[in-house]
Length: 169
Image (cartoon, rainbow, N blue to C red; front, side, top):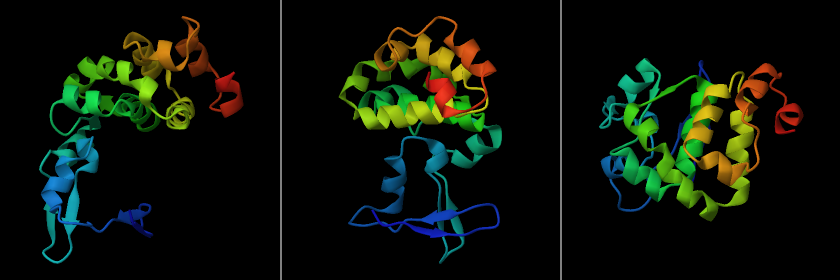
């Protein structure tokens, strides 16, 4: 996948040309989260937002494209990604997404360990990851990715400075 990064006033903008016969709307339908299912057609000046991503962004809410249960079952890493976005960007999870987070737990063992580790490290790098860590525990994912974690882990980590070595310990 080719990606062109253009410097912008508010940060970098990634431009990804579509490859193959897929049209833009179909491509957006395949995204996991509505925040990433937005597109702009420079030729017409048109924004394409079929899943309410702009509305979700304004509300600070993370939602899936389509029903959460099917997205989470098909993409088990999506649960950890949602918790990471919650912790690092202060997003709240859409009710459907939060209610179905547990659907990712059975598939986590099939994910590449380095991808799981990367999501956990990013989550732990947030200023206050405690609420996301509590959801990690309540959904059953914690037992799979960090077995033997203390019950007070979320509270302890929230009190530590956001330094990788301290929080991974």
